[in-house]
Length: 126
Image 1 (tube, helix red, strand yellow):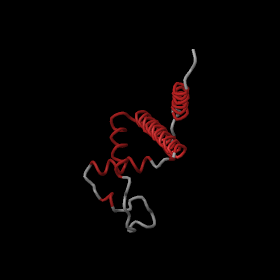
Image 2 (cartoon, helix red, strand yellow):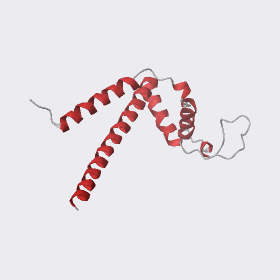
Image 3 (cartoon, one colour):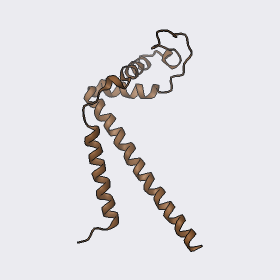
Image 4 (cartoon, one colour):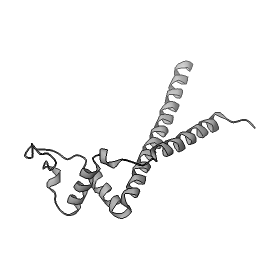
């Protein structure tokens, strides 16, 4: 029984996916990821405090400096995940997001690789 190129690629991708999951599945240190700020932002937005979009809550020296909070959505999502599933659930959620991003990246690369193959074939023929 011989393994085709496509099967070989699928085996390698499956191995990489499992390896990445195991590597990323180690205990996460959320203290270095500004998670507290994201969770507090999400809590404030869901409680109706919308100052978080433009007020600089986390600066000691420049509290009046205008800011634009461009990552407020992740705070809402992270707060909801932590509220219902705890920190372990939040760790699994982050693992899932990373693996999904890896999978999408690999899929896009394979599509790009097929396009390049088609273009090179067309150049060789023409």
